[in-house]
Length: 128
Image (tube, rainbow, N blue to C red; front, side, top):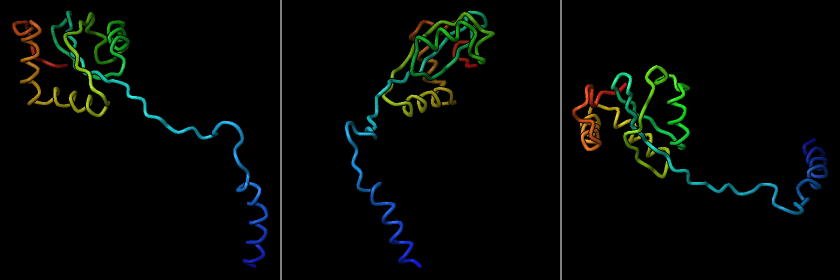
């Protein structure tokens, strides 16, 4: 039984296996495209608090924040970009965002705010 089935399969599989692709390669190689990611710090003029986020399109993300399209900040507009950092990969950017939101990262965040001239502002260094 196995030899009969094997012979039949080989007759069926042969045309598929022996067929070659004509023209362009049907399966193009995947080339990774490096898209820079940004970690950004926003300041709310409404409540004086700060927001830290991560994105690959900083201009669009800031526009969406100020239009009220981001749930976390929609009631805190207008928002102003204090600073941003650029990273080669999303993993690096998300790790930096996570650090800045941590207890240890708040110390560095306070330094960043002082350099940006926000050190004496009410609620300076507080995150949403």
